[in-house]
Amino acid sequence: MHATTPALPAAARGSRRRGPLTLQRLAGLTLASAALAGAAIACSGPAPTGTPPITPGTSAGPRSVNIVMRDYTYSPTVVDLVPGETVVLHVINGGLEVHEAALGDMPAQLAWESAEAATVGAPPGPTPFVSPPPGFDGTRVVAASGQLVDVVWTVPLNAATAPSGWFVGCHIPGHWAKGMVVPVRFVDASGQPIASTPSIPPVLPTPSSGG
Image 1: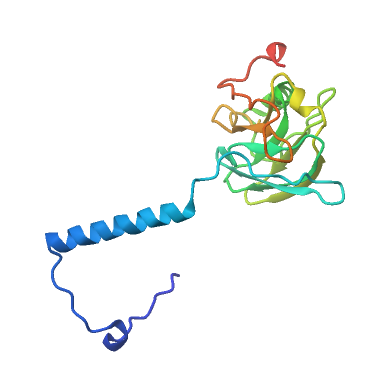
Image 2: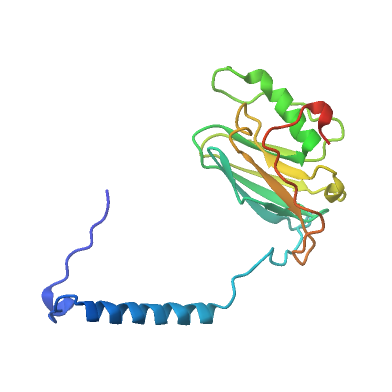
């Protein structure tokens, strides 16, 4: 039920009547609006660019990283991480379907995709257990619709050296193909990138070509 705002009495609203909106008055209002907009832009200064400085998280004080999942997108569109820092991932599923956030390089993404492909056509329910691939040092968070899951995780020190880059992807069957993947950008404490942000492959390569 929407709350309604009670109408104010005429005295409170002011009884001054305004004449019809002529072309002259419209031009004056337009010029005034333009002047105000220009002043606001001048005061606000240039729009910020890049990643602002980051205080890397520690085991005693992990940095909060929010990841919002929807059908079939992530927010933010790029996840900034500092190699070696400890973060607490706040993963929120705002979609209607079960989603996951699998953080890892391309071989890890391929492993999740292959393991979960077996559930194609299965009735709705919990996602299957997936054994981490050898050497996997990422993390995977699964959340039902409307669920918030918090996970503490330490970013590998060598993560930025992965040839394929890192991604956050959903491997519930068909979700990656619908666009549910974003890149990870590795930055230093000043917010400067220390590795190139990977391009998202429109189609996952076969496991033999991943890396």
